[in-house]
Picture (cartoon, rainbow, N blue to C red):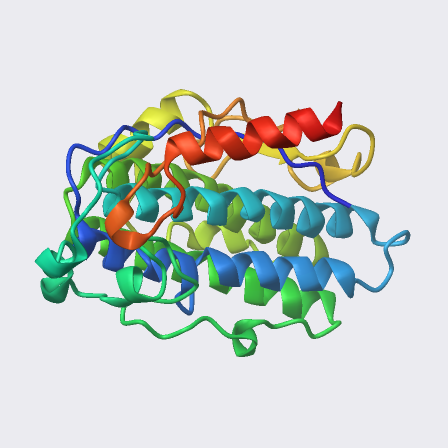
Length: 302
């Protein structure tokens, strides 16, 4: 089971303006072949299907906890996309839009019109070109070494896509999110590499980073490295998964510093509120109507 905390894993900067084309690029990091939906579902189903949960417990603990962190990653990428699409971030009041005046006319020039037609200005489970995420992206073989090798590949492929999206946009919200995920993805790649080393003796972490460009070269990633995020593997449970440290120990391939297991999630930051947009009929009701509905619910509950 899972415990949900109503915070993002980091605090995102507030967007200064809409940037729908950056949002379409960031979609690759959510629902693309190597996006966060893929890392989440690969590791989650591998944890569901894991053979030898007791005899191979450190490896089960590793995959299960990284899967849990990935839940927060899809939340963070979705919040980034929503912030890039938002017209009135944080606002609960606005003038009613005149639908005859084509208030969504600007979207005809956007890379991904589905953001407005299907989602009302929201993130969608798709890649950069509108292709929908699908279960064919999930690999769960039952063979521990094969699964770990696949996960190592998945993390470095995801890193490659993050770097390419970073190079495509200068949007500060997108780059802040990407900087954080470059660091956390580096942790996951190193963790899977250490797991493979313990099973096979092959020094997988010597391959890192792939591509061979250090995270510290990117200001948004270096900021999180300076805070030690590249050393931390989080244990997302009050009492379970105590054997993470049997794999996650020794030096970080990033800078040689000692890695640590952290009990509990990162402190994080506030969730993003896209705001009200009458042109998108989102959320349909005016604020006054919502207050009236809520008041009726409270009265009924008494």
